[in-house]
Each structure stands twice: as C-alpha cells, then as structure tokens.
Image 1 (cartoon, rainbow over the protein chains, first blue to last red):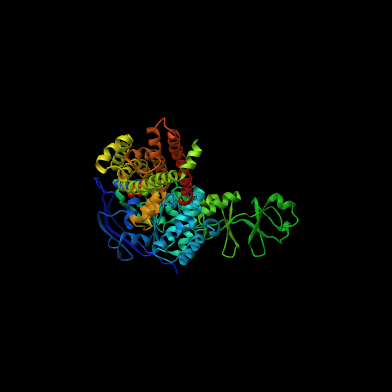
Image 2 (image 1 turned 90 degrees about the vertical axis):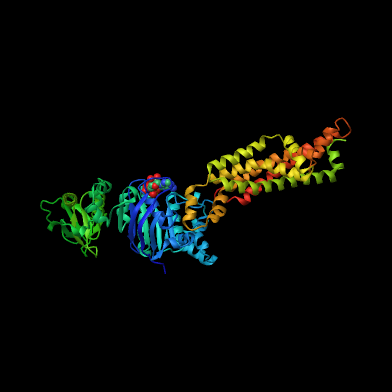
Length: 371
Length: 215
Ligand SMILES: Nc1ncnc2c1ncn2[C@@H]1O[C@H](COP(=O)(O)OP(=O)(O)OP(=O)(O)O)[C@@H](O)[C@H]1O
Ligand SMILES: [Mg+2]
C-alpha cells in the first residue's frame, strides 16, 4: 500500500542569498534515483541544507529546475508540494503544545483525511517507529527522550505516506548509541518502504551506513564525488574527499568487505559425542566442539581436554559467531567479544571456518595499498 | 455608619458601579489584546519594527493618566469614549511587548518544521506561533488588567463608568457624613475586584494553555 519513491532531478540549480556575492549553491545538477537513499555529506556551511531545502521550496532557487517524479516542483503550490514531501530535521522540531498523536496526525489533517483514518494512521506510524501508542500517544514532546522525539519526527514525516523524504541531520542531536539504533531503524523502514530519501549529515560513517549513494559536497555545494559508499572508500576522487573519508577509512572499509570474501582459517574440531582421548590438538591451543549438526558450541583448552571425560560440557560456550554474509567489522566485533578468533558459520549454522585478527589486518593493509 | 453598613445600604448602586468598572476594564483589555496582538504580529519579524512599537507603547505609559485624560477630553468629550481610548492605550504596552517576546521566543526549528510539513503561513502563525506565544500574551493581559483597574478609577474624572466616582466624590466631600465610607468603599472595592479578576486569569490560563507548554 505504501507509496514507493519517485525520482528527483535537480538541473543547474543555483541559489544566491540576497546581499551575498558568492552563490550558496552553484550550478548543482543531480539525479536522485527513485527508491534510493542519497546522503549529502560535507563540511559545515558548504550548502547541504540550502540544496535540500530547495527541493521542497523552503528556499526558492535563484535559477535552475527541479522535478519530482517528472513534475516541475516550481509549478506546484509550495504548501501542496510540502505536504507530499516528508520533512524531518535535527531537534525534531515537534510542536510542543501538541501531543505525540497530534504531531503525527498533522499532515493527514492538512490533507483533509477524516478522523478515523488519521487516528489509524497515527497508530500505524507509532508502531512503525517502535513507540507503543498506548503509552506514548497522549504524551507531549517534553515528556519524551531525545531519541523518542526523533522517532516521532520521523513518524510525522512519514504519516501522509510521501514518496519523498528529506532529512536534515535528523539524528544529529542524540547520543551515539541511540543514533546507531535510529539508523538501524531507518534502514529497516527503508527496506520496507523504498522511499526516495535525501539525507544530510556531517558524519561520514553515517553516510556510509545509510547511503545507497553518497554525494560528497564542497564549497558552494559543488559535487566532489557522487558514487556508492564502497566506490568512495576505495577510490576517493581527490584529496578533499580523501580527507573527508578520514583516517578511519580502512576501518570503514571493513563494513564493505564480507567474510565470504576473505580466506578463512581452521580450528581443530571434534563432535560433542567423540571420546576425548581420541582428540589430538597437536600444536593448537584450542579445541572447537561441534554438535551433531556441525554447529559450533564450545571452546576448550588443552588442559580442559586432558581432564575431561566427555566433550559435551567442556570449556566455555561459543558466545558470538558470524556468517559468511557478515561484514569484517561484525567479525572484528565478534573477535573482541570472544577474546580471540571468531567462528564463521554457513547458512544452516554449520561451522565453516574461523577468522583471526591477522586476517583482518591483512585485509586492511591490502585495502590501503589499493587506494 | 461603618463601611459594612454603608455597603449594605448602597448595595444596588455600588454593585452596579462595580459591574461597570469590571466590565469596562475587561472590555478594554480584550480590545487592547486584539489590537496589541495584531501590532505584535505585524512587527515581530523586524527588530526595528519591534523596537519602534515597544517604544511607542512605553511612551504612552509614561504619560500620567490625568494628563492623558485632559488631552483626550477636548477631542472626545466626557464619558465612555474617552475612558475606553485611555484604557486601551495604557493596556497596549504589556500586551504588545509580551506578544513580541512570545512570538520571538518560538523555537525557529518548530516554525521551520511547521512550514516544512506543509502548513500555510497563516496556519503556522495561528496554529503554532500564536499558540506558543499565548502564555506570554495572557501574562501581558493580566498585567494590563491589573493596571487598568487602578487607572479606571482616575477615568471617573472624565465621567467614565465605575467605582472611581465613589472615590472621587468621597474625596471631594471630605469631612461630610459618609465621605470616608464612600472613598474607602470605592478603593477597597477596586482591590477586591482586581484580586477576583486575577483569579479568573489563573483559570483561563489553566483551560487555554496546552499541558505541553505549561510551566
Ligand atoms: N538564510 C540565509 N541567508 C543568507 N545566507 C545563508 C542563509 N542560509 C544559509 N546561508 C549561507 O549559505 C551557505 C550554506 O549554508 P547551509 O545552511 O546550506 O550549509 P550546510 O552545509 O547545511 O551547513 P551545516 O552543515 O553547518 O548545516 C553558508 O555560507 C551560509 O552562511
Ligand atoms: Mg545544514
């Protein structure tokens, strides 16, 4: 039922603020593909917000054309246009005198939906962003945490099911952990909804995580590079982009490399029902115990093995494992959690190999050599 | 005759005057609120306009009420017109100033979001900005009302309605029987009515200010 995204096209768009010599946005052309997330990232004052706000005409372009789903945005009544384009900003900008439900229901109200339909939609939106309507519908914004306010902001932007969503640093004002959760949620929502989203951020990591494509912008909103996250990480167009990608580029690139792409190591393994005395660790320090369906269950040391009468409850359980689809960053996390090697499993959860820190550092070095 | 006996004796006239007093003050406050909010809305976006409107309204307030009445009487004559004009002018300052402060205090992110999700300019003003400035405007009206209760007494000089006439004739006939009672009744009556009106403001505040922004 949800309306899918439509294409946004900006053509030679320029914005010159009154009384300023230099344009804030200079001859900006871009196609934002339907149903994709495009992230504008760039230094403060480079014109990200100005560029975005021209799409819903909160700022009128000085020249150029903008089309949304093939329709000339400059020919649509601005208020109508904005009711069809979701808008979410930093600090959420919730109406403090309205309840959560009233905040979310405002655009459906403006569009003339009847009470019942609006109320149903409000409940649906609250569920979608993970707020229990029974608990939160009647609250006022000041009775919410920062993260909850941002969720309401996103719900309000999505309430009238707009095909296009503009988000200006929507998660800029919350702590890093909440921010991570909100990003995960947005990705989950987007998986379902397939809106066209223009997302502005300062944070390159956020851009890599959320963007189908990233536009790295420089002064006067010039496009320094417009490409997929892996293309930008692997091949920054110039030094400015490389600088923006930042020192953590190799770590970031780990999110783009999958476990299946690297060579796996192997641990000595034994079935849980095997006789301990038949197991020979050789030079290895650790034994990985598998269950009857070859799924990894426990790690045991040489000493533990020597004293054990059965393998079923030997050593300590495997806490965290990764799959072939996981990113190397996940693998790194699993290694930290496990305190050493990460176990890799296949599609049925069966053991396929292990991954250790040297493999990851090798990959990082290789990536660095290539770029 | 003591004050209570005096009040009981003249209850009909006094209650009518009390009613007229309150009625004049309330009506003038409402009128000033309409005018003051309109002025505030017109100027709040421009710092120069805001400064000018506030300065003008303050200037009016510095004119002693007797002097203002003396200026108005030749033009509008004795009676209700002059009283209303004087009271409205005095009530403007707190209302204009608080409207400007209230509208100026609205978080720009909230107004921006309101426009960004497709509210018309008028909608943003009436459904968001004025609603958020309302506690400040109401506080301005409250101050204005308190002020007018006293000034309305002076307006009796211009033959305006209300308890002022009690005070004036009491003072004018000082020494004669009941003159003290008359002046006291007028004065205490004004104070009591002012307190009652203040209570009404507390109630209005309760019922018209959203729980989301109430302090
Ligand atoms: N209303 C305005 N009037 C005049 N100049 C403006 C206005 N808004 C922005 N500018 C200028 O235009 C340029 C771009 O501003 P913009 O807000 O688009 O930057 P930004 O990339 O969003 O920055 P940030 O990351 O800090 O939000 C800046 O130099 C800014 O000073
Ligand atoms: Mg910005």
